[in-house]
Image: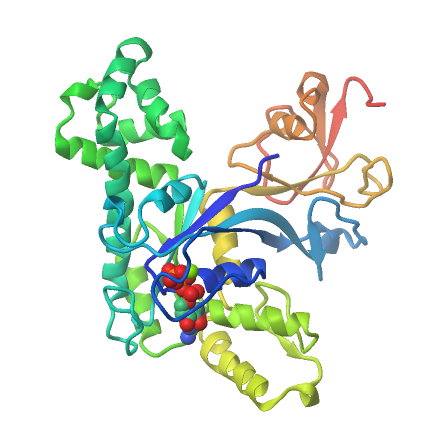
Length: 404
Ligand SMILES: Nc1nc2c(ncn2[C@@H]2O[C@H](COP(=O)(O)OP(=O)(O)OP(=O)(O)O)[C@@H](O)[C@H]2O)c(=O)[nH]1
Ligand SMILES: [Mg+2]
């Protein structure tokens, strides 16, 4: 099963690498200077939801995922990108090769500095001076212009292929390299009303509009309003979420998540990523700096926004915006185990609309052929092959031929 790839984009200095480090706990370089990150960092993060082991009251033994305090964590790929600035599509800043990397992701997290403590060039300034909303628009504009450039730059290729393959496939030959599927193209053509218009007749404005819509359709995005702990950030967060009506905006403090995960690794606090609380294990073992840092987080992060927002942003993007579901297949309905007796060994991350047949295909390419029906383990109900899976379903597949 291929893992979902999520790219972190945004202006320089907004906290992308901090977010990445917090989510992956790798040590990529963080600095208060523009363009600290020069190469993309790739790491493993997780999406999480309450594990069904709690509901069924069993001790599980995960194989393809983790279960921490009854939360199930499934790996995804996270890509931290160098910061973008206005003109990036023309190679400004660190050039546009990174846009290619961004475009190879399935979805994006667009990180903005909600405190407004970076100026238009990405330098750190007093909170409130910068404008996260215009930063957001600047970066989105760069993404759209970049798609536009690819389409414009391949006019002759598209026109050539259109004659034999049709418009959708012609655009697909040019856009497939940046993870744009033909269903995305079809959807964008319908939304823009260009589905029946020969490509050679598209005006500049229509091409531009298509670029705008294809960016939207092909890369689902959550906006991360970072540095929420600083002054002015809450005000800007509200402005962002009230203005950007079509995207989800999640407030976050990536710095705090990173500090908490580190403190947890050192055994100083009890903290599960994404949790709405942390507990100091040995108050006496903390030095002054650590104590102050934890108090700061309690006051400026947890009491303001309940959680640091890092894990929440990842979960929101994957489950709510992209519509993925966790599904737990089991072979033994009584023990909730596989053939070897491992309890709830796997969880699968399946896309919106996935059916029992898709689940079977994920487990083994041969299975759909032999699939008779499924059993919903919670209720014992028999499920048809075209049953559309729900999040946190526990499923037993009944096959015509037993595996040996
Ligand atoms: N107060 C506060 N500062 C933060 C937060 N997240 C990141 N920072 C700080 O913001 C600065 C920039 O962080 P980076 O993670 O390097 O930013 P970046 O977006 O990766 O920057 P480039 O790689 O240069 O594009 C650092 O000084 C971080 O410590 C946060 O939640 N709160
Ligand atoms: Mg960085």
